[in-house]
Each structure stands twice: as structure tokens, then as C-alpha cells.
Length: 342
Image (cartoon, rainbow, N blue to C red; front, top):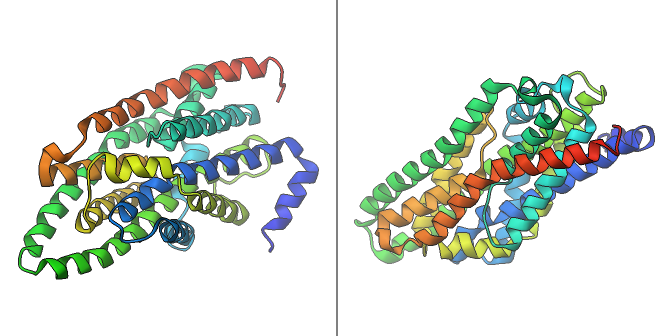
């Protein structure tokens, strides 16, 4: 229970900082709620798990990532993308308000957009409203933007290749044997994907809180304290438990109908892509990776079976996410800075 003590101290000594930490955890919760569909959609649509068991399964492995991965992505978000000497608590507050709003809006319209890209867009917009380009660390932004395209491509290609390989192996066995094995394999792939989701997305919230602590001169290290790590994983796991059922329908059946073996290929490919990105300290979109993999697995089976209209609608939402979030955050920070001198 030692991790509770710093939180109590912060509430007493730094009420505004504490409030922003709570908002950051609220973002983490909505991230879990919004992106839980990515973890459970395929395993629910193939009926390997019931919806209730699927969210419990995904939330458990979201939290399990705390014991498996480090905090490299958190360090990138916390200090690697914006010169922290220019950051103020108000910037982070605007950043979080916008990201939470985007999560809720896209959830309402059944769009599996990227919480990660919304977060980056809001951070960039709030930063540019005060300091223009000299506050932005271009090297890390370049690497992140490259992975915006590379991560879903890796997931898509791996999903396609896994589909070809698994179907080549499966043709030597009876259909009942293949289906039974595929259901067990999909449980494994779903667990791996949930670990990758927790590993990459929970660390984004850790990075936000570290940025806040650094900007308030409450820490000198970009390494997240243990209490930050624990609360971040708890918040995203709690959000995952809510299900995000609207987006589950889009991801699980509106793009393409999936069999257990198809779900295994898509989830495994996505998990590999997420683990690669996390090992390289890069924050990527878990939504991007799974959607790319699902679409390509479906096209490998039958390109006409893929609902490309839904897919292109999602792609347009992705394209608009960062510039839209950046523009709105810019305006929000300009307005709030007139009234809040923090």
C-alpha cells in the first residue's frame, strides 16, 4: 500500500496537480473503454469467449503487462517528444481534455479511431499554441509518424502471411480438429494482444503524469514512479472491463466475418507489431494494428468479403485525428490561458 502515500501527500500539497493526475487516469480509463474492442472483438465475434468472459480475459492480461514490459514508451511521451522545459500543467490539462473528448465522441459514433493519435495531436496543438516549433523534438515525432504507417503495415503483412501459413497447415487435418485447435490458439493470441495493448497504451498515461511531475518540478527523472505505473495499469484495465460494445460490432463483424483461425492470425500479427514498437520506445496505435491485420486477413480469404466502405471510413477518421486534435487543442489552450495562470 506504499504507493497510496504519495497520492495522499499530493492531494494536500498540490491540489491542481492532483486534479490533473485524476484527469489523466480518467483518460486512461476511456482509452481502455475505447480500445477494449480491439482486444475482444475477434474473440467475441468468433464465439470463442462470451462478452463477459472476454472483457475479464482482456483486462487481466492488460494488467499482467506490468510484470512483463518496461517503461520505455512512457519515457518517450514524458520527455522525448516535447521539450519539457516549455511544458506547463495547463498544457497537459488541455491535452487530456481533448483526448478524453475525442475518445467519447468516436466511441459514440462506433469509430475505432486511435486514442494514441488523438493524444499526440492534442499535445502538439497545446504545445504549438505557446512556443511554436522550437518546443517540438522533431526526431521523435518523425519516428512516431513513421510508425503511424509502419505499425499497421507490419500487422497487416504478418496477418496475411499467418493466414496463408495456417490454412496451408490446416488443410492436412479434419475441420473439427482445426476448429478446436483454433479456439485454443485464439485464446493465446488474444492474451498476447491484450498484453501488447496494456504495455503500449498504459505507458502513454504514465508519460503524461511524468510530464506533469517534471513540469511542476516534483521529479527530475523521466522514469515513472511505481505508484504511477500501478495506477495507470489499474485504470486502463478497469476501462477494458466496460467493454466498448459499439466498437466491438464494427471491429468484430462489420469489417469482415471472422473464423477462430482468422482471429488467431489477426491478433497474433497485431501483438507482434505492438511488442516491436514498445521495444523501440515508440507509442503506436493499437487500433491501427488490429484493424490493418483484420482487413488483410479478410482479403487473403476473399477480398470481396471485406467491407471496404467501413475500412475507408476508419482510415479517413485516422487521417483527420491528429490535425483535428492539434487544431482544437491549439484553440483550447489559447482560450484557457487567458483565464488560468498556471
